[in-house]
Image (tube, rainbow over all chains, first blue to last red; front, side, top):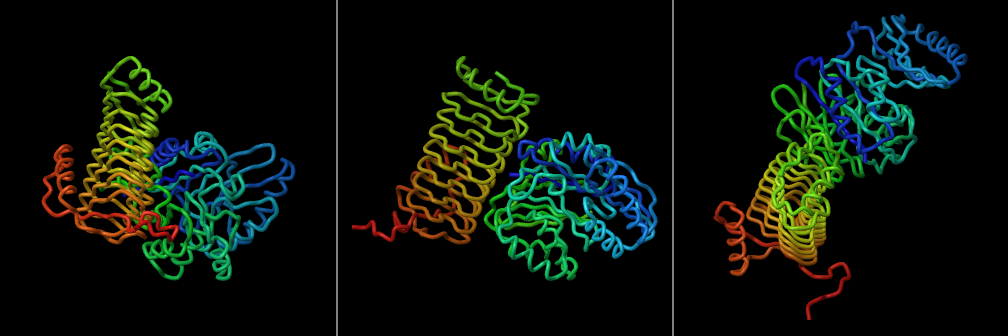
Length: 305
Length: 223
């Protein structure tokens, strides 16, 4: 089933995180397998500075040596500014590494190299932040402090898993390492996943999971890299992707929503001069007090800051 | 009586509604309904409910008798499987308004989503604005009236019933055809639109009906 939300403010908003979390709490009934957000504008980074959120699996002693390996890889590309431990359990740790002195092209290489290390997963790499984990949004918020984040826009996902594993790695949002700071959350199934994936892999897109949602972000990233606008990318996504879906795409300046041709997954939008919001259900948009509008089958919308 | 839904779960709201009906209440105001789902599910009896805001999915599902006025919008599947009663949605409605309904009346003052009246067997649905994609999908009976436009594949695979439309029809679904309305239709439309305070019926309605009653079997029903 899954619940998806997105919100974009025209200006920086100190309450972005708490608004996003509240919207997601209101959709908690749509799934209990995981929750995640992508937030933009929450970090004060230099132009050549990026944030990497990494999951390190293994016992504590093993993790220490893994982190050393991660650091060795990172310093091949840039300087480590800071490492924060975001979350730790008996068999995992989530770290946030700020890396400076590299380009986005180098970040892409670094992310792929880190991804290839055993027991290391890149949960997000870029100027934005992705926080995602198993469980309810309340727990994920407690673990990562999402509701304290300021920012301009963000997307969120409440997961009801259908086709792929239940772990933080398979939770949404998903990103592409080829296009900067793009993320997707999705409610539905992409039934021509394997064909779509094969075409995208042939063009050099790197899949980190077997989750069907991930192919959407690579599909859209591919279109943007070819020079199409987000509007054009969504228009062709509605045409090319099969199955029931409603998905939200976020980029550094935009949020877009697309719905399948048969209209089998719900999505509403609401907007005024200051804010634009999307949700699977009106219940998440209630606190904004705006008029809502259902998207028609096959419809897509894009909103910019 | 009033029920403030703000801090209540769906189950608590529905239990409170059932108890109120058992106690003989005939008018209930739902304050802060907050677009919650399943409000009024399976409610039986002659009671008037006024929801002071939006309701979520399955508003008034399986109603048998109640009258419910929703001041703002309703989510997907309003009046799903209702057998008798009345639902009025003053704003927009999501997909599947009145899906599988057996009887009663549903009114949407603004627009409705896709698949309005899907597999409905009887009863009446009136949409004040547009009705989206596949209105009357697999329709088996009853009447849908659309004062605005009908989007693509209207009447898809319908086998019985009728869709009356005043605006444009983007395209028809399989087994659906457009015919002129007759005097009886005109009389009924005039009466029902007046009864529910819709603007006067200037402009001609057309009617979408099934081409054949059992088209999927390739068997002629005629003769």
